[in-house]
Length: 297
Length: 279
Image 1 (tube, rainbow over the protein chains, first blue to last red):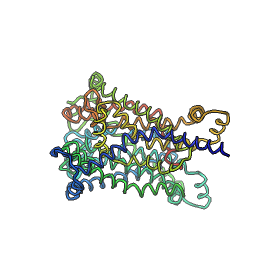
Image 2: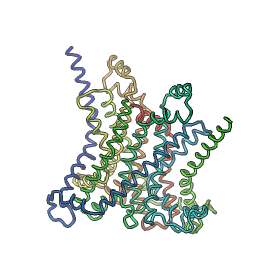
Image 3: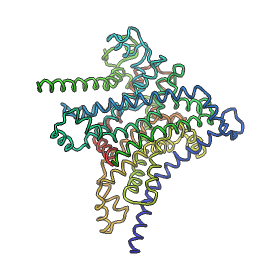
Image 4: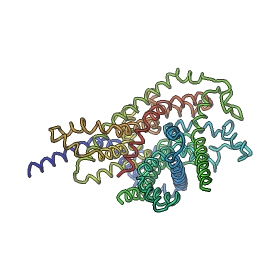
């Protein structure tokens, strides 16, 4: 009896030891900086301050009374909701197509996923060239199809800049979404569909009663992943518009970066970062619950 | 009647596939098209749908640029280092979480996974001062650590799920035969986990290769620059009117990823399917 107990203890100890390297790594690059950032958000830590003194909630008060912050929050939320929503729909359609009996299926499966393997910076270069107001091919397409009768400069247009950035994100991220949903589709047991066909269910009814419910945890999971990624999106905003024109695409990531690393107000930047993080957590919890609850069910 | 309906559905399906194919592939075609024209041909409207004369001078120029080759080398070192570190650490942690039950394990796992929720720009404010005091600014180590931890939570989850599916009896049988716990992991479990290890490697490699923010801020020496910030500084700023070279550089920066991706993609699908769907 005693011997078995010590063996169990030894196993537990071994298991915990194996987790130590990961815990150390996450502590160095995530937990410690996180606490440093939270601490900095309560300091008067700007270029003008001499002693970097504790100033309580002053940064938060400044922030919550500035219209700039609410503007960035609106831009970020609009961007995240549109991008994730469109990606969910397009990704599901693409996954269903790649799952169905089509000719050259494995060819399409490989080739359609290519945008995902393209670095974000490269997609920025690609679309800067395509969107360009003077020589871009987008204008050629819009004008020959009659959608627009004059040249547009999408990234420099107050109303078009944000949708233009969204387009790049959707183009690059949808393939990953599709690959994950496809994996989910492949895991639905064929017997479920067979049973439904015997019960006389049509294609549409099978889709709504078998495919979608079975996919729910996967969809919640990919939605969570993409929400977290896009809430943080920095590269595309920085390289495509850098927040412009006139702040039309100034997301929280750009606002934080500008405040902390261009105006060197680390305290205020950290405060934006902290509020942003809390919002992201609030946003993720329902998605996390959904992914988790239906897994257990 | 039934036949008709089927043809309608079929043509709808192929029509949709065609539209999506064009939407997703056109930008890829376009960057290649642009990279094979000279700037005089590029700054014309309407643009040329295909190169009039093949122009490969930009590729030659980019490949001869010592600066670009250095960006390339740096990115490769960072991505390879991150991949090695991430695979090693996530195998250990994934195995620990999968095979051994210990107190408060569930909470620990959720804590590990929740670290990916913290916005990188927020962390960066603390990270910058921390690395400054540790003397890590302008080192490969800084970028490797940053990319590894970005990828790590997902990798640990993926490895844990993979190990969950490998029969527990297998490990116990090996231990009955007198193998140590580490020996069991290395000789019995790991050879069966290749798809999981591949998926973790590809994922980390892609994440590290794609990093922009850390490379932009944690490194300021020109000879430590990685590709993403390097491309942005070189081609999106003062030289933004050398489209041909920018496109050629962009194509060359993507090639290693495409090779990795096209050859190893099936592992990725297998790994993702195990890691994200089951359990």
